[in-house]
Image 1 (cartoon, rainbow, N blue to C red):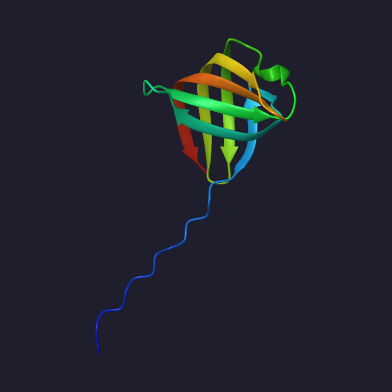
Image 2 (image 1 turned 60 degrees about the vertical axis):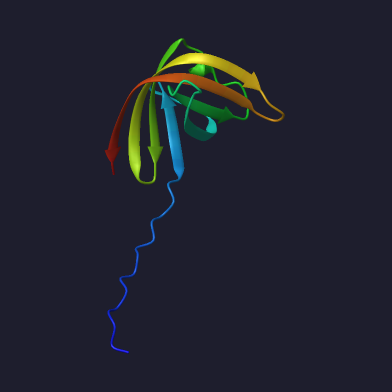
Length: 101
């Protein structure tokens, strides 16, 4: 009857993609994901509606902003694919540093 109150868990806001810059130039991306390859090496996958000239380099320094943090990534180009209505750019990630806003 007079038991302990259960602590309420705080709800975390989902992390939302805000903007992406590649070598200091804004990139028109509508989604970005960070994944791991079969070997376990980190990959950055960028989805765009059209061809993005800022991503056409062998080495790119990215600045990815979300509503919670800022990520600075250094990556090397791996491949690009055409899917139904969008372009997919895949990069091998060399280094990551993140800053909470």
